[in-house]
Image 1 (spheres, chains in turn yellow, red):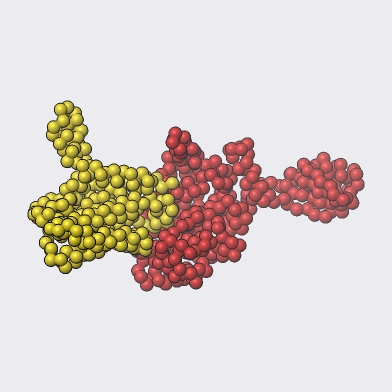
Image 2 (spheres, rainbow over the protein chains, first blue to last red):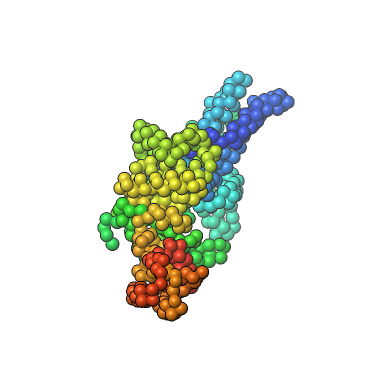
Length: 254
Length: 316
């Protein structure tokens, strides 16, 4: 565990010494700030617009971080040959991989907290606070952890370009799983139904984490819903990371 | 195989698939060798001979297709074995956002060393490889030679019994090479085993207790530098002057090679008998003996001979 922590700490240090991160963070703050100006133009819709744009910005910037830090998480170490130095030390490969992932999680976590605090402060100042906002932020963070795990998996066996295409592809498909479900239930052919069902359960159902619109509209988000989505995130994470570990343990580091 | 060997490699074979068509390239083809504790073992060969592949198998980065490897009596995939080993990769490149000191601290943490030991060792090693002045500079400002030195320092953080160094002299200026050479000799004096690869013959020749020359994935020659360069040859060179035409003819018949320049003659004699006879001829003919020396091949000649044979390195 100490080893994983050591590697995570170094991964986090790598990210926070990267200027791109601050650029993204500044961009997110700018988006959240602009939402106020935009909100003033739409009387009666201000609250909805600020929450919608704010949560959307946090989600978007978070996904960019998860994908673009994640896709090089392992492959960059191989490409730059730093992996040879690190794996010549008395550590297991799974410790390296999980440490890298945890470092990325810490990076994303800190950024979501900073951006979320910015949005919460704004909402509080306007007197629009509702605890639902916390639920929305938590679910955004959980989605990011799943996306980061997927990026890590691809990073452990393929190039950053391919990993980016696969991860972004899964991200988009992950938000369209509703269609798959409809297909699984209503397709005329039995084979199509089975295939659609298999895909539906295999692919990440990222819509499960999306309550942004409802929170903006002041609709209720139940604790049960948050709990179920969290459980789903945990299961999916463990599955993806286990696969990443298996792939990386078997990989030849030429 | 001796149970106590620091490194035992037996019949290692490995093929890689390259390119889109998956063309097979044979990197190793039955490579065997043993490194004894406390020796400096030079692993010599041209680029593409299989040196780096062997080292990657030694560290557990790559699995052999067949054959066996034992490092310090265990498997390189066992972290407990790697805890006693130091490794310098070829053309080392480290996290450029860290400083030299931070990097060594990181390595020390991976070895599970307590903070106090990490600090003390890092400071001493930076001093030892002569980059203490840059300890607090980020690695992106390090030159190639400085990274190479830092690479050696990180390999020594755990006070290892065995060092595996992939091309430790590459990227170094003459001062740096000297420093590394002296450091390797110091490490041997401290009782450590050093296995290093190189394609620079003079480094291998001056440092190694024993040398293996690899070509095309197998060991083409193995032994002490002395054994290899004298190589069982009784070849001697006889230089003489003031010889009669008759003596030149007689010596010429004994020799495999004869060069003459300005009244001086150089005869190359391949056997002890020929050498003895040549001395008698010279005694009778009464020429002037200028020199009589055992011919040492340079490691370079041997290298070219073994590696270059019929273009495959498998001549014998």
